[in-house]
Length: 247
Image (cartoon, rainbow, N blue to C red; front, side):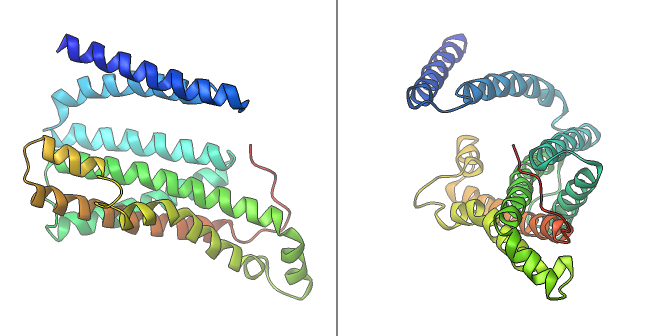
């Protein structure tokens, strides 16, 4: 086991050194960001792995773990689109609604067994993807509103409400936010083998059962993502002043 861990660390170090070197050679800003992200991920996954070993079968602890994941994910997404109380309320509401509705359908219909192990697995995946989609929707809407502000002002000068003047932008932002998840779903099995599928097979599950679980996961991601993105875009749509550029 020690040898395997050591080999893994060496491999990861080489990969990160390669990524950092390429970014440095091309003069990309924040070239150390990927390396720092991986280092942080290693520490966090190590801690989570130790913790989950003792709580994965306990419903109360699994619920607490999901709450922590949700809070961290929502906070991260809020920071990405510009921290404010309004944005925090928007992200928490959008992600909370999408995740709650989706997981309720998954477990109430019996699509996936309602047990701590599966709740943690699919819940964590849906939360993580909802975070990315919420961030993409918020940032994309802000960028388009800035880039096409003359168009927005023209609509308002003609008597359109702030929401009406940005309605097309909001819809485009939702579409753009869902592109990565849509492409991942369309190419599953042809271009990529998703983590849930591979993990299930490594865990001893038959390929057919692993495929069924992965399809449920992908459908859950799309449902939660669609709800999240629409709420974010609709919430941000009534813009009265030109948005500030995002960092």
